[in-house]
Length: 462
Image (cartoon, rainbow, N blue to C red; front, side, top):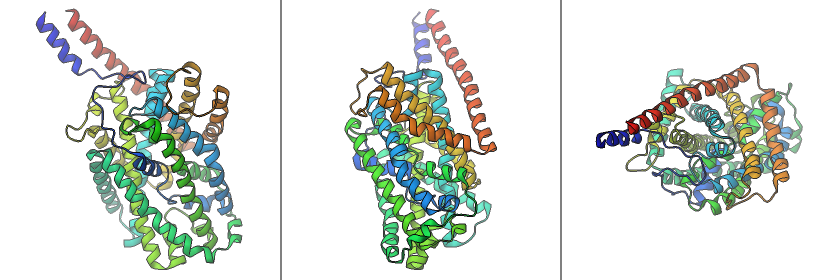
């Protein structure tokens, strides 16, 4: 009997941990090293990283349409998502964020689907930034061959992965430094460009409005607030720091977007040239080649900061799903020295490196489609938890009742549905394939998990 008990205990070590409630935490936890300043900077890079990436929006819809969207969206998209994240992250301060929220509201199957969609979205999203890094590097050194682009993108991904393995504290401090590095040349461009500003150029319209691309670009550039909740298990005093950091980050992101677009499009009205990577050309036109080079270097810093922040959050999704037995338990292992989910970080980085050859435009539309599906689930969880768990401790609570929570959630959900409806046929097909693959992977994972648990029960019974 003693041998059977020892065998059962040995098997038990390989069972994936399950976390089904906000107050059920796994024994091994990463360290709470992220303070308020680091959380603001990390959120800034989860969402923005500067105005880079908005150039396609100018060419797709014109400056005025884009500016109006950037001024309106914080109220109907950014603030609702940021405040939902603040409430649920303070109520369930654990890594994985939205996986825990949806699982708590709807059960294990939907928690897995949320994590699976977000995981795929995160991999596609993260792949945008090595691509962006290489695009801005090409501005300095000229065109690069496909092999050179991949090698540089993979090297950047590897370096950022190493930084993430070292811990959330170096990621947080690096995010603060990179925030300053990104915003400084944009501030110089705005100051030098205001005297040359021609507001009449804001009224220019492209030959053909591309609403699908415009909506994808705008929503993508103002999405990611919920990603900040994925590292809630590593935030110090989350009930106090999350709402403050979210409010500060919304203001910072709005200013970082509106001012460069208003000044840049008010100086350079050549809409056909406004596409990803155009900001250094605008800066060179305003201040000379030195400012174009400086902004290009900021683009490199932005791409590195975005990849670092989002690799940090997406790897926590893998980690949380592995803890719940939804992914291989190896992904839940923590580094013995740094206390980080190093296997999840490395796995994410390898997947990102495989997508580097794809173009920015190809990746962004698939990214937004997957993100929209996942965000609808998150807002549904936010409303349902208000209804079924009104007594759940919420250190921060969005100051609305159940009806207010529904009204509060409606605008971002409608924007998500519009983004899904306007997506191209190939993008929609990719999204449907992601949903189908999630159902298949869940079935396989559950069969393996239940089989392992049955083996363990059989051992102790024997």
